[in-house]
Each structure stands twice: as C-alpha cells, then as structure tokens.
Image (tube, rainbow, N blue to C red; front, top):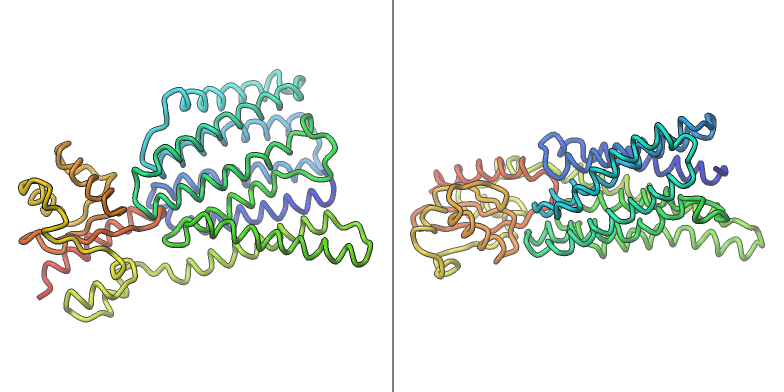
Length: 375
C-alpha cells in the first residue's frame, strides 16, 4: 500500500468510526440502527486491518482480512432485510451464510497458501450478494413508508456506487492502479448512513454530498494543471477529507436536532392543535378522519382505534386487522398510525425515518395517551 493509499484508508477508518458513534444511541433500541452499527463495525475493523498491514505484512493478517470481508455480505443483507421489513429469498440468505462460513474456513486453511485465487473467489461472492441485496431493496421498496423508501433508495444507490470501487481492491483484477477504491467505497457508504434519518434520507442528497467531495478533489486537480505538479493522489485525499468533513457535519447536525418528541410537546400548549404543531414530524403528518377509511369495514376501523400506535412491523392481532393496518400505512406512505381519538376513530399518518423506530413508537404512544386526556 502506498503512502496515499494508507492516508485514504486512515480517513475512511475515521469516517467509519464517526458514523458508528453517530448511530450508537439509536442502535441501543435495535432495528435498523443496530444492524447498521454491526456493519460499520466490520467496515472499521477491515480498514484497521489494512492499516496494520503496513507494518505487519503476513499471511495471517491477510487471512484475518478475508474472514472479516467474508461476513460483510451477510451483515449487509440483514441490514437490507430490516430496512424493508421483508426477508430476502432463501437462496440469497443461504448463499450469504454459506459464503461467510466457507470463506472463513478457507481463509485460515488453504487461503494461507492459496491467497490469490481465494481472494478472486471472495470478490465474486461479495459482488453476487451485493447485486442480490440491490434487487431485494428495489423489489420491496414500495412495501414501506415514504421515508423508509427513501432510506432504502439511498442505501441501494450507495451499494451500486460502492460495488465498482470495491472491485478495485482486488489487485489480481486491477494490478496497475495508483491507489485502491475500497476507502472511497467505505466513504460512500458512511455518507449514506448519515442520511438515513428523516427527510435527509434522499438519494439526491447523497449525490450532492458526493459531488461536493469530488469537487474538492477537482479543485486540487485544477491547481495541478496550473502548476504542472502531478497530484492525483492529493486530489483523491482532498475528496476523501471533504467527505469526512461532510460526515462529521451531518452527524453533528443530527445530534443537535435529535431531541425527540416529548421535550417540544412538554413546552406546547394544553390543547390538541398546540401539541400536534409542537414537532415537525406531527405537524407534517396526514390526519385521517372517517372519509379516509370509508372503504374499510367499520369493525376493523374500531379494532384499529383500540391501539394507540400501529406500525407495519407490529403484531396487532388477527391477520385481517394487520392487513388493514398495512393497507392504510401503504396508502399514505406512513410508518406509523397514531390514534387521535377512538370515538369517532381518528388517526395521524406519520412518515418517519429508518433509524430509532422503536423509540419513536414509544414516544408516539405517550403522545396518543396524552391526547386522550386533552380537552
């Protein structure tokens, strides 16, 4: 690894650790954030092992990197499944699991003496699983809320952009590159992670971030043309550093805005209108009165109104009732239905981001209970 390659890897490692710290709070509640933290942990570990390779070149270190890389597709698949709340096809899950176990065994046995062909086989395995993950995300994107769909699209875009960059890490396939694309693949992914919360989770915003990062490198290249200095590596470093700065800014901004629902509502007035206007998530939600579910049987609507909060992932009894709930959620692109009143049945269709769903469900339940006692 060249000095530029080492610097790019170090920047990507720092970015992975920043992203992991950024989702740590949400990850304690499980769900998407927990799977995301596991994936970021493996990415950071892989990048750290690459850096260790500068001072400790050995077949054991290569085997360790292969083991970590072998488990990345399976952990990524679990993240995608959680994001769209649908299991991937059994064949894809078996492929990811068998590959993770098989390449781990290969890495610590024959991989020690058969490194070249083993790494090529690992690259093909990773590519196959990532393509399957992309197909799963795109096939299931219409089954989730609008905000979750944007999150799925953002991650799908990140995977699509990262795949060719990851391929350049395999020197047997691309022996003459001045530096590898693996660190940039990590940066693309962690930038996507920083966009997974709320309205920020849009593919165009990820593309804008990447354009800003690429623009920083482009400015360095432009300067090199004026000075006749060969600075391709410095341009790559400038792009990576710009991506890191954007990442830190995103998570810092997210942290400053992530006060939850309850504190703004505690400051609000005592009536329903003031409570619903206290937080943008509630203020921008869609109110559902009788005409919104006139096509549903009255007994199903009454049964739905017995629940303070309904989500697509929640089990609310019979399959018919769960199906009715999912139909309403899909109809309004919502992740949650919060009850405003049970008689007459009124709801609020809320479209929330992919992270910290469990905590949001708990807070919405408290808000629904509060509204029951509001004049």
